[in-house]
Amino acid sequence: MEISFKGKEARITGLAAFDPVHIFENGQAFRFTDVGDGVYEGVAFGHFLRVQKKEDTVCLFPVTEEEFAEIWRGYFDLDRDYAGLFVDCADEALKRGCEYAPGLRVLRQEPFETLISFIISTNNNVKRIRGIIKKICEACGTAFACEGGEYHAFPTPAQLAGMSEVQLKECGCGYRAPYILGTACAVLAGFNLDQLYDMPYESAKMELEQLPGVGPKVADCVLLFAYGKTQAFPADVWVRRVMKELYGVEDIKKIQSYAVERFGAQAGIAQQYLFYYARENGL
Image (cartoon, rainbow, N blue to C red; front, side, top):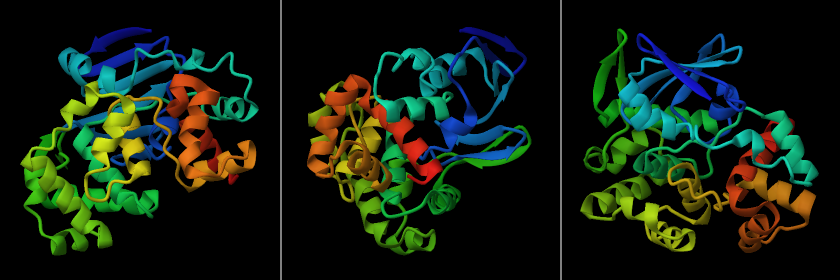
């Protein structure tokens, strides 16, 4: 992988696995949208970003060298060799998933945004989740200007806790509104999300499940997509279907341990290949 900078653009070549479609259309992040010609635009960590792949070059704009080092290198998990992760795996379903979405990468997102986003995702679809998050950000997130446009950062715990249940329901949150408000208030009151980085997976999951609206699936999504705990194996309806039909495992309590036994310490990344392939192909 080689990284160069020209003006406000970072250019990455020699990266075997990177496709904006596979990254942003697999249900792990909700603030990047396709604006045409394979270009995705969105906001993460309070920064606007445009992402495009031109032949073998990934282009990120607008980016300074400092922002790339501090935010985007980790956000796109660029130092992990995705192309080599499962080359020796004999699992046929996982092989099909890897071949179907060879440009997939698991993002490392901001913890509070990821936590609230996946509380919103409960019993919801991607289109509605994106719409709800957009409304919440516009309602209480900090506005900023970039490249002639106005954008909104994801709200801080204090900003979100300042909303009422009625306001959150007006954004489309429905029955999730008290959970969102309760979790924002808990974080504001001192629930330390940063401590989860250094905690073992099981302990971190137990901590997260203390928060309103956070069950095993939401906790696993947060641990995988924000903290990089790749043994986390979120089991939504698609993944449960895959595990039942292909592996004969349907007990939700056994899915995670079985996945780690079958796919190893990178089971959560394997889950993303399986999930994306199953959802896109209607398995």
